[in-house]
Length: 451
Ligand SMILES: CCCCCCCCCC(=O)SCCNC(=O)CCNC(=O)[C@H](O)C(C)(C)COP(=O)(O)OP(=O)(O)OC[C@H]1O[C@@H](n2cnc3c(N)ncnc32)[C@H](O)[C@@H]1OP(=O)(O)O
Image (tube, rainbow, N blue to C red; front, top):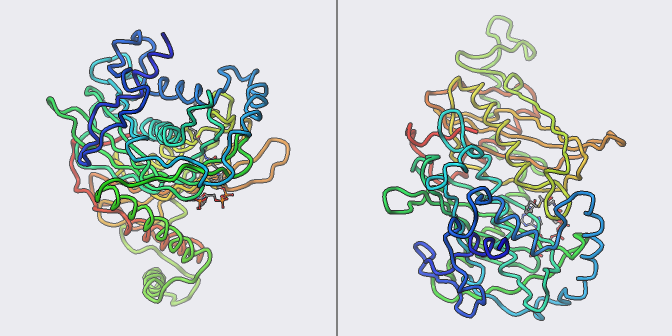
């Protein structure tokens, strides 16, 4: 019963991929077991997150109890023999092979709402980040399915949230939500996944969010890289998506190579910083050291907020590390509070970009999050959240992620001014992230998001 319910709730193969004219592959053995999750699950068990995650647990073969986790990992070692020696040894897949849809029936099943609800009767975006992360991994498991093996020999982890753009449409906790997505590009061991989210308006599901993630395949024990199936585009639209994936990879390499941690700012950026510096000199003293804020401005250091999380086993992913979605939710909520505190009104998120998962977070770690406003313009607030971990034993801190969120406030916000050279680099980095946002969304009250 449980198994059937999972398939029903995660794999709705007969629906069209919106705007792309794709349908799920017909040779898929699961095709007949289609849909409406609330027909199959009892209301208590109907939860989008639970269903997708249970499906992932089944694919990876993990324990549901922490006390059994070592045994389950031992069992996964036996799957090493199913790993391909080369990418050519794996059957190519089509985009439709990984295409899935997942329903989050907030409207039709009100008991689901609590988990997603903010006090302003909007949807918690942090929960959506968690759902996207689980969904992205599940999509990659669809792409890499090994029909001969009961469990997948691959450990698929989130490497990067390349981009999440919010559309204008409002997110109501009282209407059903649908997610869809598929693999859009593959490298040797990495896969780009495109996901969309829709919300029911009348009888129609309207797009509310676009997301691009990069997932990386690792071996059964998550210790080394593992090859993924090639991807064959089948139409001009799919070829364009694939080409875009290739360009995205190139863009990421360039962005990283020109990072301010590696390279000096451009002449234009240096001018910006110097002008800001001149704007903060006290005309009475004319000293390099005597700095005052211009009107309607805040020192960057005064925008900071910090938090600490103890990473309990409950927050683990299928590989017994801390779930990336949980890290994103915590970072997002701190970032939202930072923007709220800074702007003086409830902001809503318009874009998330370039969240790199540099290191896994071990269960039992202490997670230190530090958030600050690093750039503002009109109603926009660019927030950067830095996360690092330390184990209780070693006390040595290590960066695991840097998160970038773009918020929009209801009213114009103060300017943020860097005081030190390091802060100036944060300012320029924030400006670069802000400028990379696709299309700044116009302020609309009905579009509000809260954490
Ligand atoms: C049970 C309930 C929960 C269910 C949840 C299920 C979802 C689980 C998903 C997760 O929670 S995962 C947890 C969050 N993510 C992590 O902890 C990952 C932490 N980071 C790492 O482990 C490594 O940095 C990573 C494996 C991602 C990369 O390792 P390396 O730096 O050694 O990678 P390498 O240089 O060997 O490159 C391997 C591939 O990754 C690609 N890559 C690496 N970093 C990248 C990046 N930042 N962006 C894009 N691509 C990247 C790289 O281009 C290359 O692609 P190709 O093989 O196709 O050429």
